[in-house]
Image (cartoon, rainbow, N blue to C red; front, side, top):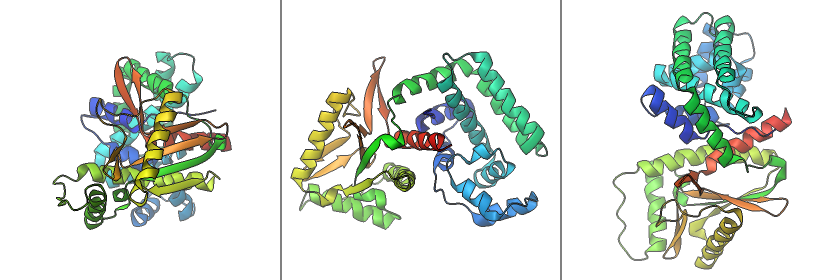
Length: 342
């Protein structure tokens, strides 16, 4: 069974609606299968909670994708210590949306009673097991649960719509190869690296023209953060015998870039997906001798049956252009792999 989990944009949408602000960093942390863990903090929490399991047991689980699935107090305490009470609320909301997504995949329709019961059942489990001696945590879980139930119809409509969008996600074992085309800046680890990488791309596009660094680097920093998570998932998929090849676009000549661009257009035509994120601009856009990639990187997925698809791409839903990001695909694909293994 393929499990499609909500994309980060859907998590963020409901954080803003129910919690009053975007807390998508929490969702990125939860979904990252190689997340960095504060080992001193984790060790302290285990000691204070009297955990007898080996430290590596919790460390490995915390580092992996969706550590909330262990139903343990350690995860929520870690979130609270690292990201504050707001982060805890975002984690609870993340859990409920993921639970709904898994159940919607099995249900023929989004029956509200079924999903209210799902919320209540998770809260009862917390009361009787992993949050039974943490009344403040339990109170916040109940509060988020009530907010979710009050908006259940709209939440389920969003998740069902997301399922339609992501239904074409294949299985890990069906993939022949993943090709990753990326701009150099997504590999930057500090501001100097970032400026140097942007300069490198600029001079390839506009040789001899003066380079002026952008005043606002937030767009690039966000893309770097996402690429780190994507790279972690790609590494995980590589361990599952999925071939992954990386291409830095500044190392490719103009002819190679044009062939990639042409290939994306051919795939879009066959798969009935869009190559543009706006009326004027494409995800993969050649400028001079270089290319600009929306989000910093693009994936081309080749399946064993010869079919192909790429991310990011766009589709039309009720006169609205919906963007499907590489990370949405990768997280769903990773879930597929886990469900097949189990």
